[in-house]
Image (cartoon, rainbow, N blue to C red; front, side):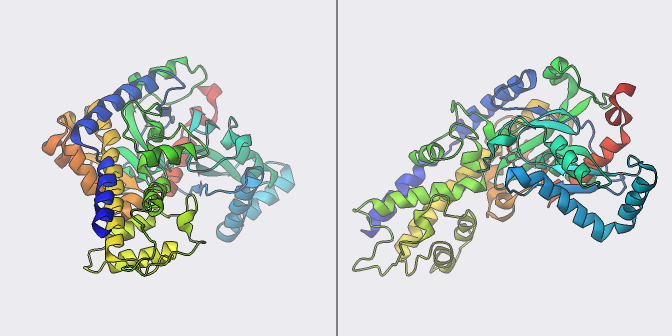
Length: 464
Ligand code: BGC
């Protein structure tokens, strides 16, 4: 039984192989889809212009507010956020707040002396300016249909105004854009950062693009932005790369996960790469082995005293948290102490045999490694597309998210795949400097609020 179990685990693991030729196909296709996204709307890769036209260099100073959206019910969402802002102001800037209220009472003037706020909203939003944009779709399991098509900045501003807060929503910020800005603010040396990427619950990237390549901007009549840098940050929304599945690898577990999700057929790249989904892919693969009578994974037998209670999260969709993968992958003990602890803590599985633990390890490794190798695809594509490896000595990349931070060897596997792309190779890989930009989205949001507050054309488009 035991060797059959390991054989089957190895067979399933091979289905997650993502070899060099597929990586290269992926890169070619990514470049194609990204060019389409720069030219027109409604493409798989949204390539959203963010209207942020410069990255900071570390000298910027000021007092700005930042709000990062967690999640709650839509009807109350923006009121909830406004109340949180009010509570924050009362604790940290009460004098300013009171003065504002006094002025408002005395002369009705509530326009002056506003705090500029950067609003981090980490979902695909079609931006029409630095502080306005309509929600295209929810991702990462969110599903509040009412919100789609609405301007999320206007909704937050109106909730703020209802509470008479001295706050102006100055910038709408995707977390990847925030990560890019924050990394550029703090990264060592002269070079600005090229790319900000998130490998966490979801995945996405934002990069610095030449303005003349963003040809769809020409069709945006009311778009106002500063053209002096000749560049603009583009939010790729790469979670939706190759939704039509022309090059992405797949297994029966991926297909079933997608079919049972609340957004089948979209975020297909994200569903193979990011933390929200890797646990569920693993759960489905393990469940198939559990339900196979010839294998009997996690079923007691003469040789195994394993116990798996019927209320275990093992039986529940989305029940397996991706942190289990990180715990399992980092176990280097001979008796697989950490694998056992993870199975117990996450799934109430007790006394698994060593063979069962081994099978779990094999699958975890395969799923995590495929994710990391897939992550190299947009990275290589953006390096090639921007030509940065040819022009720059160092190409700086800021990353954030639980996978890249905690999954052992995520970056190493990603780099391995990067080197397998001939236009990058060993030499190119050496030029790429990847650094964690911890909680960059908050700092980045404040930085973008700063840029926005300084730009008169954005505060008052008629002046342009
Ligand atoms: C969203 C992106 C976001 C990413 C990382 C994706 O699901 O569509 O906007 O940047 O998650 O949080």
